[in-house]
Length: 157
Image (tube, rainbow, N blue to C red; front, side, top):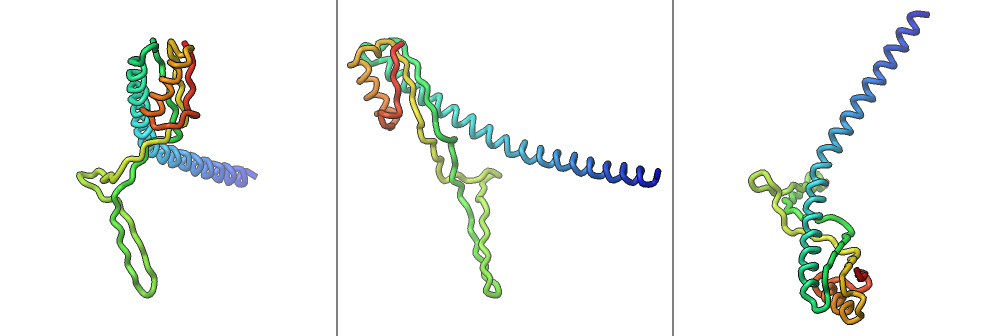
């Protein structure tokens, strides 16, 4: 009877050890990928804040507009297209294609950065209760951001 109990304890201990190791591996994988996501998030957030500031500064200069607050939302983060080296090897009728990122100084070479599409814009402005001021704000926002007017909401302060 005691032999069966010690055998069960040994099996349970092995399962627990395997589960703990699996959790640690998953945690390490997500923590290493998380740093790239946070970097992309910070870069996207900085891009959006710059757009908001530029638009606010432009709108404040419009006649009849007082205090302005702008909030911009985007559909995704900034993505990059990396330079890759492709090698095609054909042996015994089997073709193998390998790709590897081209690096300079240990960093991958970026061919281009793709900025996120703007999902919506909220503008709260003093003076926006006047229809002419509101139309001028709308025109300026569509030109500065390059978005359709249906993505822009303007409210009076």
